[in-house]
Image 1 (cartoon, rainbow, N blue to C red):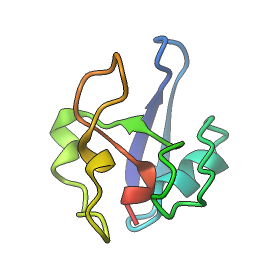
Image 2 (image 1 turned 135 degrees about the vertical axis):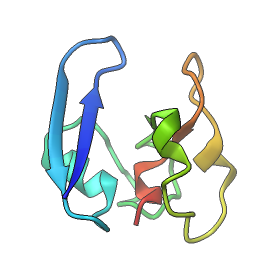
Image 3 (image 1 turned 180 degrees about the vertical axis):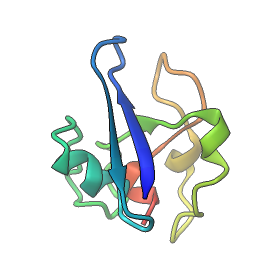
Image 4 (image 1 turned 90 degrees about the horizontal axis):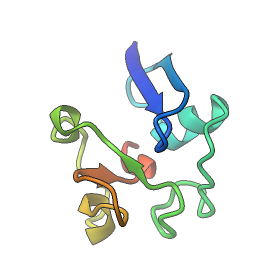
Length: 89
């Protein structure tokens, strides 16, 4: 099992859950009730599911199935690194 920690951008509620290796982060987050839209259903086409990944964990993610600049950029006002939960598929 993999432990996933969700923290609100405003410093609010923190929640930790477990998931199976290989599960898509977007799917796991939505099943946990996290407010990630995922308009493109995890196809990495819309960037509505942008999250911040801890720097220590970012390089441990598998590469995206197809390169996209948005997988390594940060949302305005947020520290790098950031990525798309759909990336971990």
